[in-house]
Amino acid sequence: MDYGSEAFIMKILLIVGLCMLTLNSVFAENKKSKAFHIDAATIALFNKKIAKALPRMVKKARNIQKKKIKLANKKKRVLSKKSHKKLIKEVKTRHCTEYNIKMLQNKSKPYNKDITEASAEHVISTALIRSIIVAESCFNPLIVSPQGATGLMQLMPATARRFGVTNLKNPKENIKAGARYLRYLLDRYKGNVLATIAAYNAGEGAVKRFNGEVPNYKETKTYVKRVMSLYDRFYLAYKNN
Image (tube, rainbow, N blue to C red):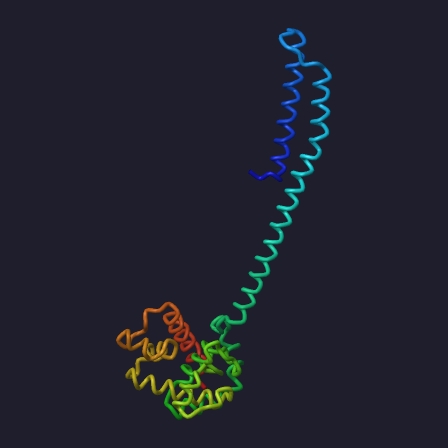
């Protein structure tokens, strides 16, 4: 039961009122019948004590209610703060797939020359390179994941070293290593773009466990779908360039 609620306070008042009314009625009946005796002084004393105690009871109930409201508001503020932090985190980590193609093209501009050169050198569509960059870093060349993946194409240092690159925060070097890795994966999976994208996300071992197909992992399936959607948009945006 909510001991601080207005409903509870009203119940207290109602019960006390009924008790007083009943006792006074009993006294009146007994006075007439003289079956047993409750003198007027006793009734008066009872009424006086009730009248004195009632405000304290109501005050206590109201204090309980105030504390409950204060606690509820505190919890609400904490939840609101957590929700705000969660929202900020989501905004910071949300994928650029939410942006329109013009915004994505603007983000790509500083790196267009490097992307075009890497595309020509390794015979990979610029749309695929851009799509991976968007999904991985949203064109942030300095981002580093908790696992250590670095730069535009979020390459692990060990992977980058396989392809002769060490400075992953340098956009040109990062794109060069990423393009080389994509070429390697495309060759390994005989041109299977879906398997290539999946391996870029989940690792070559994961694709191997699923016989060269996209692993049945929610994150990887979402990633592949996201990259393919971006690929289509970039292809259409740059096909006449």
